Picture 1 (cartoon, rainbow, N blue to C red):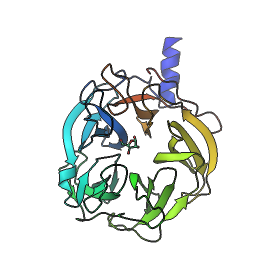
Picture 2 (spheres, protein in one colour):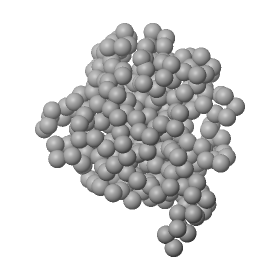
Picture 3 (cartoon, helix red, strand yellow):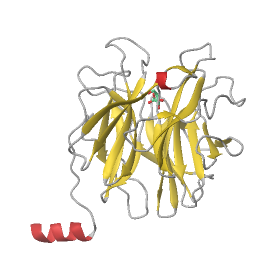
Length: 309
Ligand code: FUB
């Protein structure tokens, strides 16, 4: 029976899903995962939680890159991008997303703009750094933010960009602004918007959008409510309308934020997120985790069964 099982699994192109255990790293403290696959390797991009134990508020100044060939053995490549790499930025290295296009790697990141008088929860702009390889070196691609302001909201909070290059090569950027998701087309140069910013109507949206496509369906997953669950909606067009589908991940016992990436790697689907499960963890001292993601026969995402809290 074991031989038969192995034969069936390899016929499906699926291997047994193995993990290195959660959280992935005891140190450094990582948050806000984004992932891409390049040359048979999965690259993980994370933020860095540096707040002291017992103190409140995010203290985030830089981003890391990690890689794995198999989801078990991980390499920490160190800090590859930081606030100081952007002349226009002042603070708060929140959730970013790195994507490949035109042979280069574009890492979109939100930070508080120097011109903003507020340093917490306001004045966020989105910039982009570029490199020839996922491991860098990265440099500011345009010297100024792509999205610096919108008149849509009195509190200017442009965070959590996610960029999607569609099959027809049209590029889209989605991001969050607490309770409101937005979308804009990007030019092929990856550094300029190409048209108006539109609102994305996704039920319960709070922050942390992520786009993936399966067959001909777009899946928009996001942190919903606060404290956040991860929920998702689907559409046949990235511009919507989005049909609400339900909860993927329940709230975490230790972190009000819940920030996910979803990817297929070597035949298996993964849900990558953060919790605050380390002994010295907390809402501002989070750690990236990975668990199995499964679809039912109708393409609905099953609720993730977390292997750790
Ligand atoms: O890490 C700072 C912020 O918390 C992120 O931008 C949000 O997605 C939430 O995880």
